[in-house]
Image (tube, rainbow, N blue to C red; front, side):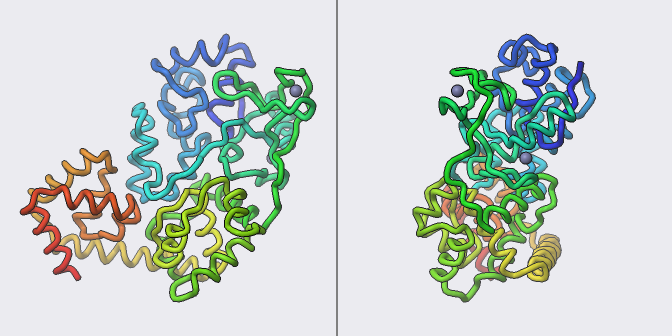
Length: 387
Ligand SMILES: [Zn+2]
Ligand SMILES: [Zn+2]
């Protein structure tokens, strides 16, 4: 029997549900048959989703639908250009195991997924009533998400009786299973989840990003949005308000809340210029904060500005094509450094700031630096003549 499952259920949970329904003996034993290779059972970005859809689910859903509704790719992909997102998805479907690293929003870092699986007990109850089996949700597994967007309550990650964390990896069970250590079915919420407008707003943005409806996160748009909200203002005062937004006491409090180290320089740069090296949780929450600061009109303006810029670049592109030799040299560098191919596109369009946003300034600089001398000077001249 092919299981029914809710939108947002993880591929790992759907796999576990197949086991629960007797379709497979175990996740570990069926994985090699499904994927033909060793795959992380959680499969959070949809590696070889076509294979899973065709084999485990007998084509009742497509690999594309699986990636779009049951993996974290739509959330992180919303931070990329549409071209980059499409390339990422294609690489995942093709089974490129390094694709998640190559396409993951390049100027970000930090923990992405919590090691211990998390669940919302109301989601579990609803799933049992609707599908007979409960499912883990993609959004709940992000390390900096601590409550359920649908039910507004803290997520659970361990046994209430003995405190044992939910098992992960190949040992992962379906949510709501009895504790492997003491057999209790009572579970405990994450500790110290402070409700705040930051938490509520970020969870809302993530839920929209998951449905590809968060245009404010796209690289070109968020640069305009951050400028609109913060340009010319005192960065220290903005950081203070940002902390209040999260009800966090000081920088360490904010780091604890977002579950990552926050580089002061990166944060200040992000506020001042729209492009700074920060963990992905910080980038997402600062953009969320900026969107609330400028309101709907401000967000719409940032989207318009990004569209105008795009149109201008397309016009300029027709006039100023560099030699194919330079493009080949750049492409070779991009390949050597495992950069997404669209970085080359941006550089050829002289969109240095776009390339900076995509891969970070240092990487772009190192790429230009590695060009053969004659190309390097041609490139720098071309940049200068563009102003
Ligand atoms: Zn819930
Ligand atoms: Zn227990």
